[in-house]
Image 1 (cartoon, rainbow, N blue to C red):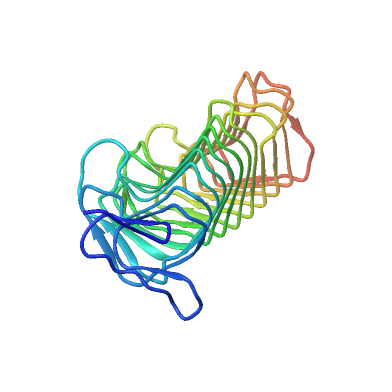
Image 2: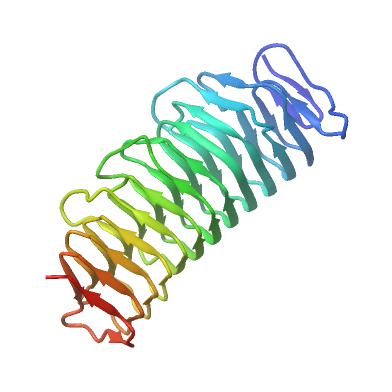
Length: 314
């Protein structure tokens, strides 16, 4: 059953819409939002075989208002709990996403999207963005079951800011990553905490200009040679971060990268690894303590610009 009112298509049940005292449009059941405006969710929404909330418009503010959006079906394909598609100037904030949707939030072909103050307690990827630009993710708390998936994933995206997010999954596999970047660029990640995973951040396929600042990576040790941070792209920076308890600390495959001011401690293998194909990288002012080995830069022209404190590594 579909009913339409005030830029909303309601997908199930009896039409239930009103206006809050401040003029925002109230949503109490699964809906597609198409028209500009301010919306507020006024009830928990649970669905099966459909997205609880979908945004396909511009200039839209959705306040989840502390409510829970939940999807109960499992299967293949895109099964988002909250889906933003071909939209711009969208803000989503203030609630919890739960259930079995394989992507709690999916963002496709959109610009200028802010996702803020949301808790993730679902199965599958927390948030995945594709071919989108000017994205901001702030104050997200991701406690998903990340079996073979990622907390935050981005592919073919540009101009992304990730700030003050906590990634602490309930479960994971060796294929899980805290933050996964593929063919993306101009990414700033700051003041985030990533724990209980083998791999904290994985920047793949020449994802470039990645700036990671004041983040904490406390990992599980993992298997094989899983790195806390993997950088395959140019002009990346890792600055003032804690990188603890993993297998490898930071692995660099790109060029013109800088690793500075970090505390890299208790990783089972090398603290810093520069691949033989990596050129013109630099590191300095790091504390490198009690790792399987300190710095592996053999066969490269990596620059040690000094100030490193390297001790108690074999």
